[in-house]
Amino acid sequence: MPSSRVAVIGAGAAGLVAARELRREGHTPVVFERAAGVGGSWRYQDAASADPLGAGGVHGSLYASLRTNLPRECMGFLDFPFVADEGSVDPRRFPGHQEVLRYLEEFARRFHLLGLIRLETDVVSVRRDTGGRGRWRVSSSSPTKLAGEPEEARSELFDAVVVCNGHFAEPRLAEHIAGMDGWPGKQTHSHSYRLPDPFHGQVVVIIGYNPSGMDISRDIAGVAKEVHVAIRAAPAEMQSATAHANLWLHPMVDRAEEDGGVVFQDGSRVKADAIVHCTGYKYNFPFLDGDQDGDPVIAVDDNRVGPLYKHVFPPHLAPHISFIGLPFKAILFPVFQLQSSWVAGVLSGRIELPSPEEMTQEVAAFYSDMEARGCPKRFTHDLGASTFEYEDWLAERSGLERMEEWRRAIYVAARGRLRGRPESYRDEWDDDAHLLDQAHRDFAKYL
Ligand SMILES: Cc1cc2nc3c(=O)[nH]c(=O)nc-3n(C[C@H](O)[C@H](O)[C@H](O)COP(=O)(O)OP(=O)(O)OC[C@H]3O[C@@H](n4cnc5c(N)ncnc54)[C@H](O)[C@@H]3O)c2cc1C
Image 1: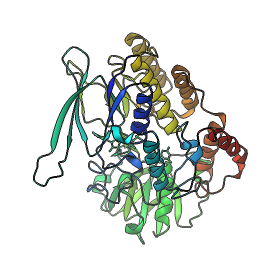
Image 2: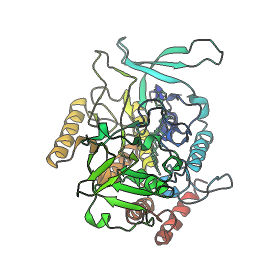
Image 3: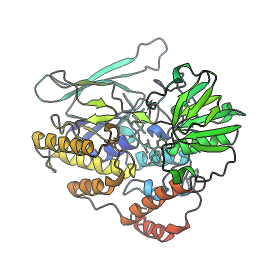
Image 4: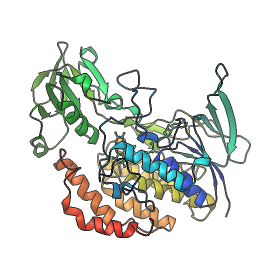
């Protein structure tokens, strides 16, 4: 089978599993990682971006208290169980971020990936080579260790590029809120949130109630005078009691006022000291320069990265450039692994892709269907209800077994509890004990 020299950009969960699957298929991956170690998002950084709204600079978006929002046995890669063992720094089912980093570092060691990774090496440009063989020129730079020496720049040719640069580093703000520019208080994005201490005694408005918004509002409620969360949600959820007497849920913010007032869509108003925007992230590929004609490889439009066949291949450049890790609302690590196995198999010729025209048609049909359903572009990579169908599709193409039923059932149960019991879902979960038994029986073959 043909083997390719492949540039993998990023050594987070996606880049690590991509490197492993590529090598398993007989390719030669070279992984470029800007940070000083592997793990991507899971490398907690004390420092936040200088701009409190978070643009530019720091990659990490974890807060100090972060615990996973999925139970560990469901979160791990398909054949490398994420179980507590003697090396665990946090053996809980929903462990703190340090344990996830440990797991990813262990994954890199176990599958001998560290030798493939160039740390502290920033990919600055990826461009289709004009030499006619359809290869990619990847330019990177790394600091030299000698003071006063310029950065070392390198430009190399690869048969293929797999982009795994993550998409939780560039903050996205909610649509324009009237008066926000002149609002006098302190505004931050969850990307820059680390600890609750700066909010001591304050009245704080949190915009957004995704898993980070849920955690951060409770973290801050422990020290603040009042926390008011603006949430797009059904009335039943609005009434769900919170365990914090100083935490209230509201509809979305209607406007902000010059005297510090924040008015919600139901007309209620609070005078606040700070606003924390928990409004998600943007996809960004600053290093992608273009194809051989200088045309963009992909476009990002309202957080839709496209056109991409099955969230992975741009039809006109497939299979020589691909994207791992774009989907969200899914069991992410296993999805990254399935995508990587598919890409590796396509590159070696073991798996066939449809023609570029067929892929383009399929992508167009997907976009039209979203439009007909009134679904905004920014939900393109939200797997949501179609996540199991997508995983089965990838597994079938790659010749892998379907994702285990217990994993799916644990995932569904955990998502339900997260919404219904945000205070306690990580520590009260007796109802899926029988699924855990099945998980651990399956894990035995990999341990
Ligand atoms: C607050 C928060 C909580 C989360 N909780 C969970 C959870 O409980 N469970 C779960 O499964 N997922 C969770 N996630 C999602 C998490 O991001 C994914 O689990 C996963 O870590 C994403 O991996 P990735 O490899 O795609 O991206 P990342 O982990 O972001 O890795 C990308 C890597 O690419 C590198 N890179 C980027 N650009 C370049 C460049 N130009 N040159 C070289 N290197 C580059 C970065 O330095 C980074 O190391 C959470 C995310 C956030 C932000």
